[in-house]
Image (cartoon, rainbow, N blue to C red):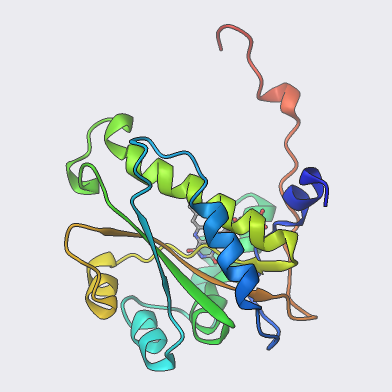
Length: 204
Ligand SMILES: Cc1cc2nc3c(=O)[nH]c(=O)nc-3n(C[C@H](O)[C@H](O)[C@H](O)COP(=O)(O)O)c2cc1C
């Protein structure tokens, strides 16, 4: 498949079919993740595949997950960009369900150089930047096989670490439910950006 096609195919989905994702596709995607650039050459990333439904349920209990839209929530997004609003209103009530029902749930863990709370400069966040390069490689590799997902960033990572017995010195980057798209899964229109409005030569 053309690389551009893979880029276009990678979209966020939050509703999955029950079809099992073959292990070779998962392994290939994690290997692609491990090919990503890493600021210190060490690729200090680990992957936890969460298949136990009780553990998944515990993960959803680490923060409030709204399952139904309320009038307050609708009001909160009233003045948002229309595509962002469509995305949030679609996504918010699906957070818990996608974690519980996705055929696979990947948790990506990394070793931070400086704790997020102690970071002062972009440089301090090099490990976080690197792990996101890894995550994008994973997502693109899955997309090549029509397997799509969603990157969920937990708010209470300490609780997530406790549940998953992640060593203290490591940090959780993202929880990624993935699988094949459910027939009626919604894909929100992507924001089209005219590159000409964003490219600057020499200086801003
Ligand atoms: C850093 C980051 C955090 C995100 N957090 C969430 C999240 O917590 N829950 C969710 O449903 N989607 C989350 N997303 C997915 C975005 O909503 C999605 O990428 C965006 O709407 C663009 O859609 P696309 O991925 O189909 O291009 C996140 C994406 C990124 C890159």
